[in-house]
Image (cartoon, rainbow, N blue to C red; front, side):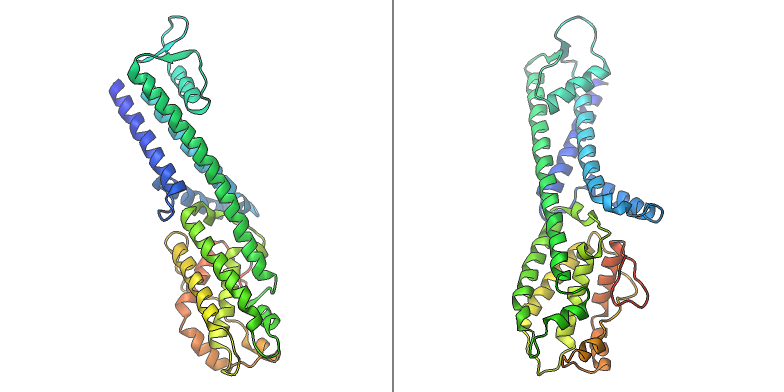
Length: 335
């Protein structure tokens, strides 16, 4: 029986270590099997609860982060408890009372989390070494857990900053385009587009490295990365298909940012986005034309935009996945 306890404990500890390293250190691996399933289920439950409890999704990120760390801790603790319970190599420092299950729980906890000495000690070289290993793995858990929290928080701040930088020059694609027009061309957008491309590429790899970042939701539209990406993609679509040939724009930067958005969508499609059978509303090219910007005919613009219908369906899927509800008649989804 005791060997079965040791085997079960080793399996649990091994599985926890794999999930911990997979999630926190493997940049291209996404979340570990445990973390992936737990966060997906919790996110779906929170989305349902959001219909009754307003803004509960704003707590989804911290809730899932704490839940992930707690699940690692509990599995770690349970695994080492089973190992020591099957060892018969742990004795009391005083008294002859037999060691009980709650004693093994206590011994495992102070070995893993405190590095201290309690009322118990391991006997024999094997269990002394096993105790030292448990302490080492406990230190690894605490170090990686702390590093993971700091990395997630830094990435959340970065994605909020990206969204704010987009909304800083306009609340919609039309407004950004009009504000960027200097009466002759859009070249003052060059630095802005280059910065957005760089930042979005960094955010994409942070989402790959820290999948929990997907679930940091905000009820504020101007801080939502999903909305900002959709709006800036509309701007790029207008630059691609809505301008007449006489208007000059740096298409190299347009292509670079478009590529960054493609990579971001591809990353989220594997984990977060479900394909939708409808697309976002098109930018209103007439409003842009009224501002004095040379544009193609509305019919020509719509025909060109139909060629990227699949892309816009994916963008709509991003909005749905982020629990953004589309308002009929609006050019842009809003909560």
